[in-house]
Every structure is written in structure tokens, then in C-alpha cells.
Image (cartoon, rainbow, N blue to C red; front, top):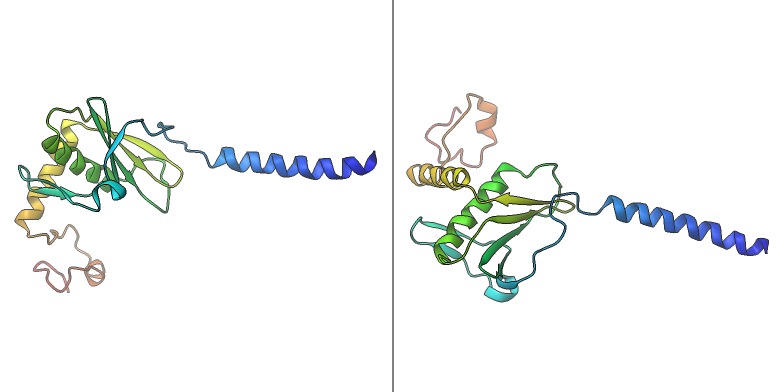
Length: 172
């Protein structure tokens, strides 16, 4: 009888630890599952084809796009670090997808997209403010031919910039 307890308690302890780890690593974002639907774009469906908006001169490759009824939902997966809130550059990237997909699927509604980090998922809303910001930044990039405008006065930052060899605004 005592021999049975010798095996039961360690197994129970392992079970409790595994349950704790499982619950700790579940998604903590507001989205708990991917909406059902037909995958209309993604690595296995589209063979890496770049989506293009000829109207706005934007292009991009979301990781997956799902069609659910009259809704289109883009997905972007980010490996590595998880965040408490989505990175703004990743939200802008989703905004680019909203614009492209709205041009390609005019008869469909694109209300939000899913931005997923390793342990966290976020629902990014397709707002007019986000689309306006994306288009404004795209316009700046076109005007500067993709070379960013310097927004600092620190020579050390210029020394580490990948554009330092072609930048007309560099400090060093």
C-alpha cells in the first residue's frame, strides 16, 4: 500500500506542474481562436504571391487571409517576443493589408485583422485613422525614395544607421 503512494505523489506533482505551464502559456490576448472560414491567401494557397493595390501603390504579403461569409480577415504571425500591446509598426503593417484587401475584395467587409505573437493575439481594428496614417507614411516614403528622414541630432545614431552611406542628412 505504501508503495502505491510512492508512485502516485510524484505523478500528481508532475501533472500539477504541467497543468500550470499549460495555463501560463495560453494566449492572453482578446482573441482565443481563429475564425472559421476559407483560407483564400497564404503560403499553401497562393504560393507566395505578393498582393498589390494598384489604386494606392501598396504591396504586401499577409501570412494568411480567411474569408468568412462576407468578411475578409487578414492574419500576421510574429515569431519571437510577445508584447502586452501590439507594436505600432506591426499595426501599420496590418493597416497596409487592410487597404490592399479592400481594393482587391471590394464587396467584402474587412473589420479587423489578427496580429499574433508567440503567446499573445490581438485584434487590430480597421479604422479610418489607421488607413490615413498608413497612406501618409507611404507618401513620405515615396517622396524620400525610401530613405528615411532624420528625426534626431545624435551622430552616434547615424553611425549605426543602415542608410548612412546614402543619406544626405547624416551627421557624420
